[in-house]
Image (cartoon, rainbow, N blue to C red; front, side):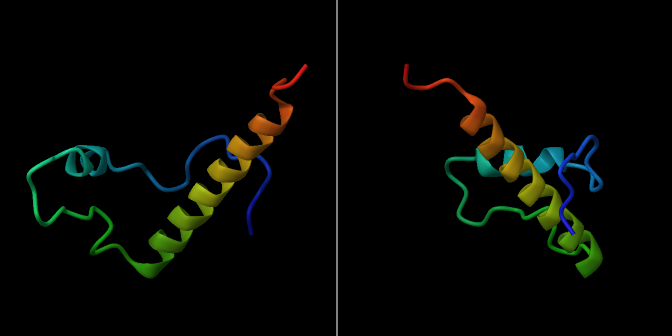
Length: 66
């Protein structure tokens, strides 16, 4: 279930994920969630969905066209 307010992430962010995506010459990128249990992956998906929903709510509140 996705909650409206996601105050704290339930799954810790992986700092190595950002570094792995920025390597320009790498053929194979390391995926930090590769060996994670399914439950952790599901929690991460829910966290990302909540963050995405929050971002869209902020966009809807943003005064764009006056």
